[in-house]
Length: 484
Ligand SMILES: *Cc1c(COP(=O)(O)O)cnc(C)c1O
Image (cartoon, rainbow, N blue to C red; front, side, top):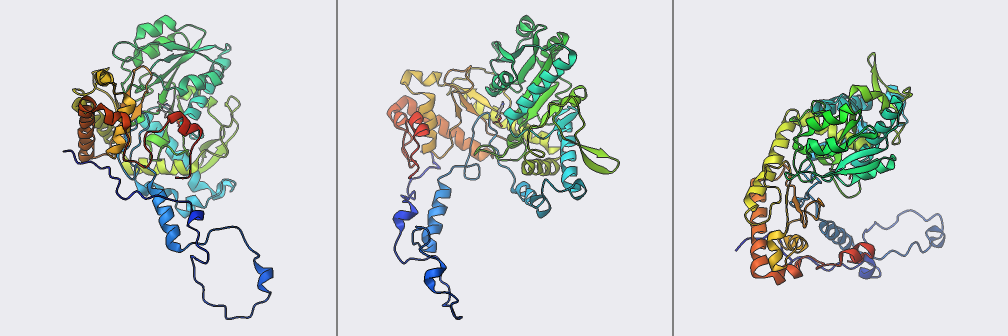
């Protein structure tokens, strides 16, 4: 019998605090007043708001229990593909909270902000080293915002060359935000089919690339978790026709310190600091999606830039070809500090982090491929993609298996994405999980595959242990019931 992490024994009902109201109960006890009152009680406070009367313990238990209803990386394994839900060392949060950073104000004059500006300047230099690209702006607030910055730079570049272009090539394995960002800049997306190995072939790019095409947007590693091995050849084809190459670098966790993006032909890319560089991802932000470019494209970066003049750090606004300002002040500063702290504390070990992330994903792929259908059976990067094809004969779907994982105490992986795999199950373990945790996950996935064969009804009803059972997903999102 497999030992499971899941249990239901101590999940209690949680009424509203108003429903726990007991007249006269109080959270504090103050000593009796020993000075005369200066005004009659009736003039002092009035009735006040209609708050419930509660003891301190009522309140503490209520909020502590609510905090435990939320699943997070701090509570368990979170193998959500395309998200890099790794554990972020708490020291990086601490550095971001240092009074000199936490208390600084963006409107302070530069003479009083030298430390903050140096941090921004140095982080740009470090990220330039990690990516191989020359110049960076830390302004964009998210991955998709970085893509928008990149597409605006494509647009500005072609305008500067004297002829605007109308199209952009986007492989079917690109992230969904890519065509959206291109459309926001007025480009028409031209889909490129990936080949049997799940990557771009130079021939398909050659067939579509022309002089009305601004360039290509490649997610690399792509959303199948595969490295675009033909990227150099693809870049040559695009460059030969005067186009630019964009790399969606949200999957940088697989290739830090291993791939030099400039050397493989990338002109513009973004990073997701809130995936790869120590800010937790999910929950609505704040995030950061730095945009990185070659020296040739530096003139188009957002303003202001932080530059070093003599020994002083200053803002540079005088950039006539800049795409303009993308965020108030200089982006989400606290996220930048965490990335800075992470990069400095890891140093050359960033490479090791990527190697472990890739090793862990390949380990899961090899251990589970006898049980789950593996559409692309080849070495993967930091995530692997299965499908529910083997379970179809028992009428068990990806959704059923994902729901069942909750009964065993694991957050489900990403499902039904990427779209190129029917019934996709996309697993990203990250480098921060131990072999024991990963082995336990593998064992549970195998157990679920046995259940699918022997007892599919259990999977159709899953999850049975969490507080809420199988929900109507659309209804739950549109008409959320927030009363617990
Ligand atoms: C997460 C992700 C994005 C979008 O990043 P956001 O910060 O959510 O806007 C873009 N591309 C890829 C490949 C991603 O994984």
